[in-house]
Length: 445
Image (cartoon, rainbow, N blue to C red; front, side):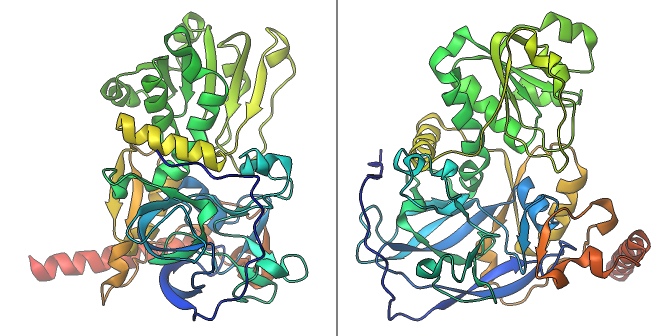
């Protein structure tokens, strides 16, 4: 068990260092077409409080898909290097680093900065920082606002942060998490997002404390959902996977939890006594219909983030004094607690290891397959392979709308190509790829 950081400790301002920046391989997209390609970015060397990490594995999160496509109503900075589920090995540490040493196994999650001064930050709730936390990627430290934090000016606005689809990165030790040596690094990345996203509300709202006395429903059965099922089962809860996909019943049985098909009206009537429901669905859905499954004075917690606005009528929660709440990842103490709990209880995501060149096809599958069974994990060690090209499997840009404020504006592929028949271009590209595959088959067979 690692000692958690002292949030009251005041740090001196980080001074410039004499070491040179270094280059790291990445997978990046230049615009909202969401097409990922191989590239290189500049990373900072270790400052006094920094940890330089060789990233070995990076999880592929559904939120990465939303971000590279500009689907959320927030700023979207390009070029964008996604990823906030990194796992790797410490290569170097700054002179003031106390928590880590070279060779340690570590992880990097969703946050790499916050003010560390507000009450939330001092309480270990940096995820609710009053200023807002710095995302691992798609964050710009702007000139005139964050001058003291800028280490590499890599865009006209200041410093653009790049994520864990990379061979290496440098992060302040406050935001780095210790992974016990026996933990399989290739399965740890998703714990830093999917894991903490569901663990924090399950603990915060009583599931761990109440154990077998509570009936817990997990709405949605994919990357987030299956982790919630594993945690709730470990807590001893009476656990139900709630899904409209009947084929998921077999998977629920394998995980040792019960299954309820929400399309079955009889099942809905027979199960209106849940103590807690965690909603992991990341596409538009009717939240109101699931409020009826809760006991009086109980909660439904939203952790999935659909691109569209959710709507719910007041009657859905007035009857029974029910509550709809939200939860956003977790602070650093709770995240380290979760990682230690996973190490002690052997809790890891179902995963599929992929080569960086296959990221585009995996993102395509993620966009079309409802709740995929495995979490995709990029083997970042493959960046060191001398010769490879990313796959050409492009997504169909006509299948989503850009709601983000795209920076720079020229990176808004949809605006630039608004007169293009996206579907025709995409189908032509797919036909070309299929044709190449047929030619190869004929040649070698």
